Image (tube, rainbow, N blue to C red; front, top):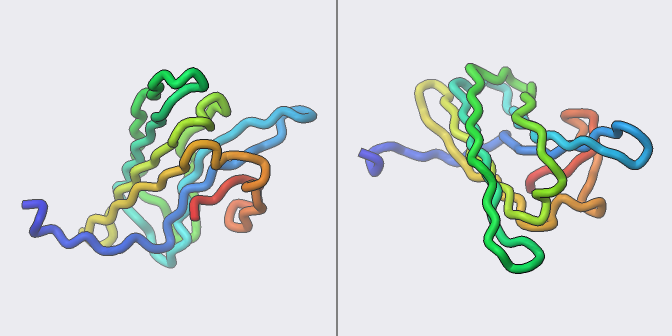
Length: 135
């Protein structure tokens, strides 16, 4: 039963939304999963979705996308998916689940509306790229 499964805190795992310059003033954006731990994580699942309201107050929701990675080695990262700037006004949620030594870990990483803005862009040394790192 779910109550019998110990859920330990997630540490050393981050989601970063990275921008790359395609042409002057035009960026492409991508979502990355970072494993900053000293051990491999296995059977990694990432579920992503966006939800919220448009400028007219109409409810808006994206499709839920699911991704699987057999493993992510210590200190490595994986490209999860591209992300379109047209959904930056939504809440963008990434639910990450993985195993370490047959122990399940999971955490939701939530980027609230308008988090993905120029003032939040930083250099992310782990990727050697610019973007927004989930706190």
